[in-house]
Amino acid sequence: MSTENRLYLSIAFSLILALILRLLAWPQVIALLNPDWVLLVSMYWCLTHPERFGVGLAWLTGLLTDAATGQLLGQHGLIYALVAYACVRFHTYLRVFPLVQQLAFVLLFLLSAQLILFFIEILQGKPPFSWTYWLPSVTGTLAWPLVLMACGALRWRPVTPY
Image 1 (cartoon, rainbow, N blue to C red):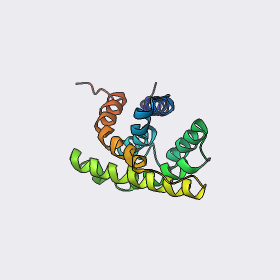
Image 2 (image 1 turned 90 degrees about the vertical axis):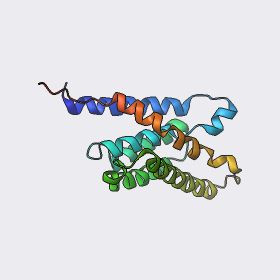
Image 3 (image 1 turned 90 degrees about the horizontal axis):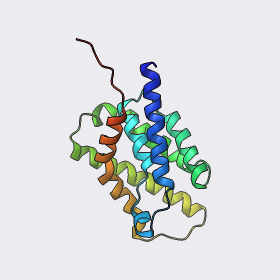
């Protein structure tokens, strides 16, 4: 199996696992804190392999998320594409930042995604939300080191002979 195929297999496996984490029936308390795992994994791949996972694949991943969760088709596609564009655009800077600075940018990206989703849901006529609506952005930021470790372990690196 070629290196490129293994990379795409790692990307697909991590996104499927993230989608499963998103779709699990969590207890109410945990569901309030459950971050957008699919967006976090998409951000990871946009930062580490922007030439392989970019805006187009992030958009398709968002459409898949919409279809799997029964949301308005395209809302997560739009959000994931915008966040992916920012990640791809600034990946050279974000990859070398220390973890604390990365966490600040991850929080900014997640809050931006949550804000866009908030406006889309307001346009749909859904009722106003409480302050707990913003908690997944905070827990997603706290989960970023876990995503870094998990996806980093999945990422296949070629072994160079001596």
